[in-house]
Length: 186
Image (tube, rainbow, N blue to C red; front, side, top):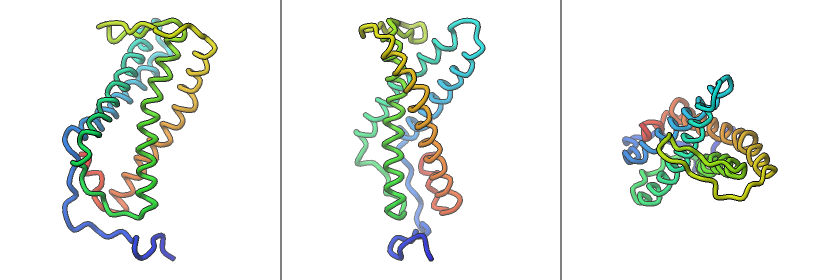
């Protein structure tokens, strides 16, 4: 019994896999780096004696938000420059598209929920000491707690889940399918 219908059986690629545009690759790996730095800041905040790390966590979190918005603009502007798809069964293509969509939604939701929660506590966000983004929402501590619960709980869990699925899919294609999918983003 085969995992693929005969017409969906993956074929080894005989031509080079074209890479994504340089800007797309920079946005991808920049997102990875910003997310890791943001996570490190919150880990370092657990034993901190002052607000330095949480302040940096918030600034990097907003950086993630602005970076991903720029990334989406870049994506929209370069739709015609997308490299041809790697041949794969329709179910894998569907999972890949859904995973990418949910990653974008979650990466946007993560900083938005925290930013709104911060403002609902009546606080602004210091952006690396360059300027402060003031609160422009009416104070509502109950809603702030709920949003922070989503930020730390559901959204974080889903972000880890779909990031893991994205990585597993890329490794599957690289090392089992051997279709050089990862090289497109390097």
